[in-house]
Length: 183
Image (cartoon, rainbow, N blue to C red; front, side, top):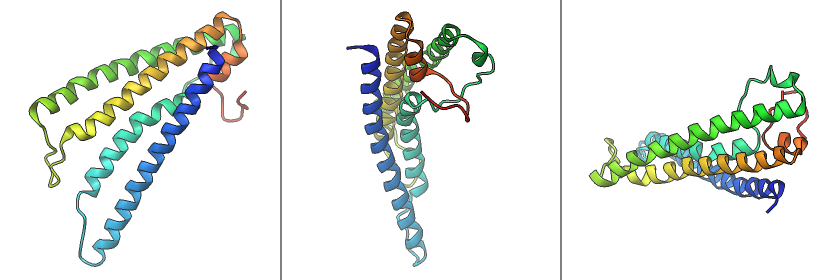
């Protein structure tokens, strides 16, 4: 598969993931709203703060890959803007290499957290006593997905740079100011 087509496929997959994450956040918001309304009549579901925290952790881990492919991660690009296309491409590849390495390390370090929860049958120290593995599994999978997408994007972008297709590489992994149009 060609690098540019592969990046388009990754973008489509991540849009689907982002849609699912967004629906999960909407469901969480509806749950919280229902709990707030119930409190007005002296009732409550209880645990909405706990559940919303879990939803945010899971949404964040899964949403990072989408943000990467939509070029939403923040970078300081004062030096980058002064370089020729090849220099910009090298800085972009360096930036993505560092990001992919850090995310892979985070995903790697998430496993012992989940493994310990599974081994000990750990539960949240809250009234809901949520089994932590229920939350940590999708959280870990989100980080693993982000790492996989970051490395796949890096290799696809490196292929584009190797082929001297700097415009396509910049469109895939570049950094753009607020006033700059994205290619």
